[in-house]
Length: 455
Image (cartoon, helix red, strand yellow):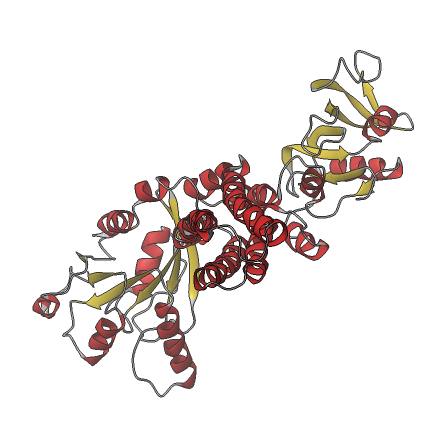
């Protein structure tokens, strides 16, 4: 790891009340002493001023750059376990830029994206899963995703992974003892080894079973609005967003491409896809949009299927009904404010929520939101103490589980123990990659490049 003192702007670009410029490294105090003049005199005292805010000015050759508050924090009791200095200045782009450049002129180097958190990981303050949790908290879009991020930052996933690895370590130690310290034909009974392996497998399976819920928390509920042309799909999107995002006309086929928007609904997020109307068409561009609508509906967590009650049920409506068969869906009977021609008995026996709406009269939208909330019961999600929300974690858990299953199958078939040990150790190592043991530079670079500069 570089021993350079790094500096970066830690607040978003733009004008604001306050911005923060941060340094981390051995030269943090030396550099801040060169440019900071406290109003009450005297330089920052490493012990007395540790974690205290000092008021004064940032100066460059007797020119006052800005009036600031400086917080010096002595390592190792800091985020990076290094000395840190944070300059709280006015949120002017000019002031922030000048202060950062002054720090660089005095010997600091510009931090790379995520380098502060990377140093926290490399210096042993947090593991890799906790570092990723920092990014999850920054990117959280709802209460649930933030809560899961904080839970993981506090070490919930790390603790569970360590318990699983401990079980595997117990199995490995017994395997190796049997291989290296017993005579031929005197191997230990495999039952105790299998018991530890089964315990690890049960814990891995439990974690993997949370990945779908974790995906919903992290990425939002992937929701697709389906219906034939001019049934009110774009009007529904606008009603949920409470703004005119999609073009609404009486001309069928207006929406030809996918429109995606995010909205917060209670404590979770909906990713809503407004699609092209489902119908047979000779228009090449519209046909591409229809095909894309059908494709995206197949991968959706929820389908909202719209039917126009002012028109008779037809073959295009039947196609919509076929598409939602066996799916997680809500049926919307729209345009109830107009003369009714729709035969509702078509839905007799359909075991799906059915809601009557009028987009022009804003009727039924509240009921739709309540129904979605009931389908995706957040109280059930909250009962899970640990959720797998990270694709990298899920992939490594699957790899570890695969190797563990192969190892279990081998030992139960009486395969020589040294062959069993290979897959078992591979499972142990895969789990270690989740928390960052023996992690490669390539993986670290991939994780931390997603961070903003200054975190």
